[in-house]
Image (cartoon, rainbow, N blue to C red; front, top):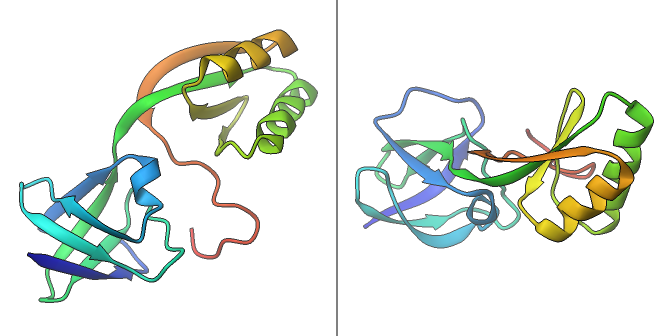
Length: 142
């Protein structure tokens, strides 16, 4: 079994990949299955959050590209910046990971949050897409 022990600062060409949803990209120690089917142990320093596009190195030197899995997300949108800021505040107050874009907020699909944001006046739609939430003010790196 491969032991993946290092995240490389800059993306580099890799021979294989590892696709994980966001909740698993937050875990620095776990057993994973590479996209080619091989099992591997992810043994990274605690607190490391993997992002789609990151590169990893296994103990034998093999390079592995990280891919963000497609997952069920909700997208709340509005042309009103104040309304979007209110929505971001309410999601943050609930410690919900949020991806921020121009005129939209993306979060893991949750019908209670969908109803709340719709009630605030935002449009909410569902899609299946990679989820890359903000890393937070005190996170370093990406």
